[in-house]
Image (cartoon, rainbow, N blue to C red):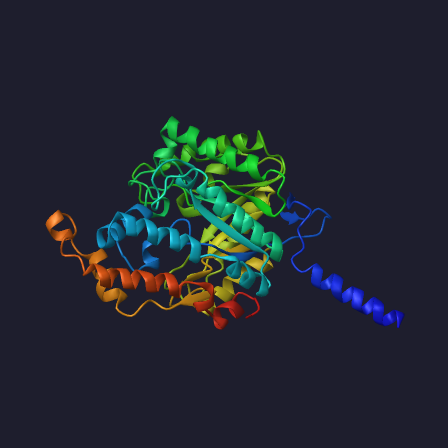
Length: 411
């Protein structure tokens, strides 16, 4: 009878501890990561991409690739008020608690949360101009992750002025952040504000200071690279003024691939590098990139984290995953969900979407007369509504082949 009681109590405790709140911060230890008890922690997870920084390819829009370009298409299709309503529903539906629960069921332990700086300002962004919007969305994700035992990397994907000079940062074609002091002040102020709020939150694993800085297409790339370290250090110092607990992640230049600017720069306590690797269209992974990142990590004596990889065939995804695991480089594949293929979760593009919505987005809209060739509003609204419905977690399908390739369970 006593054994039965003990068994029942153990069972109740086990159920109660599913997704227990983490009580320790993840920290760097040499070239690896450890939890508060000194146990090794290896990042295994995904990105909540397209949610707080929509990307044109996720809609099939081609050259209309950045958030402000996408927003303009939606406004031209259905008007400013309906566009505002679309974006609110998009943010409410695209990532929810059910999505985080799914991530936990795969056996992953981390999500990377990309965000746009405008979510923390009065600047118009996706139909809102509320500086608390960012915190509402982040608070929700952190709460869900606490419930399901998942860590969060907070990633400033779109910095003030732009850090990349392309659609990736929603800029105007140049990384003004590196040459404009007002943008740099705002960049630091927003990071300080975020760090002050989450300084004592162990669910947060760390802060990814900027995503994919300094495009390789820029004519003055070499000059901008000379400023890469200093601008990130500004943000790091701002964060450390209010938060001594969390890991700071420094990004390489040219899409998080080039760490030459850090050659004469030593990272400090609880700091590390973050890199990216994509080989679009290549079905067989070449181990060179991960080996190169591991060599940089070992030479500098700090951890290296693959913030983004994927977007490829299962054989490629599996090969790079095995290489990263062999070389102890943590990873978060991009993204959690997307239409039709190459993701942990997929959802269907609405029938007629390409012929109506995409065709308009790709059309010549360079004059008001041309914009007026828009599709019939009711039809456009119907398709936008279907997209919002299809992207909900309950309407997504796990890609078993993809998940197995990255070494995770298929819920």
